[in-house]
Length: 116
Image (cartoon, rainbow, N blue to C red; front, side, top):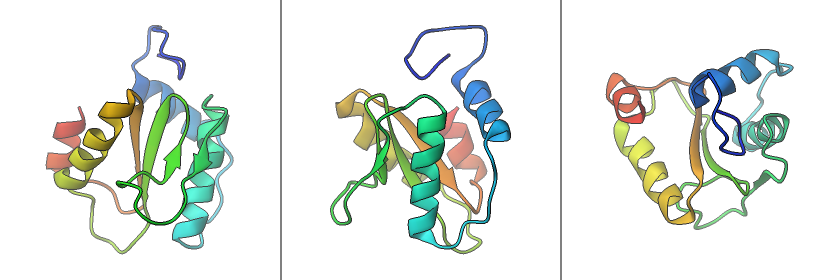
């Protein structure tokens, strides 16, 4: 599936994961840098208008594009749990956008099961 929603022989996760492997990697310095990196990656992935959201009440959305919203977690070694993934899903649903979650510390099994 491509960012514009058209179907192909791959699932969205496979498509985006393959793009991540092609995208130039670099060290992430801090949470703001992580959000900048994700916005740049989303533009590379086809979400051409991806931009960071303003600080403040963003309902967990750190990067917004026409076809997707993203949350970026760059803290500690604690994996992201199901509640955070559910929150992003709930925030993306009214906007009819794909929800993309980026974590530097991984995800719990429950978060992965919910996302699948």
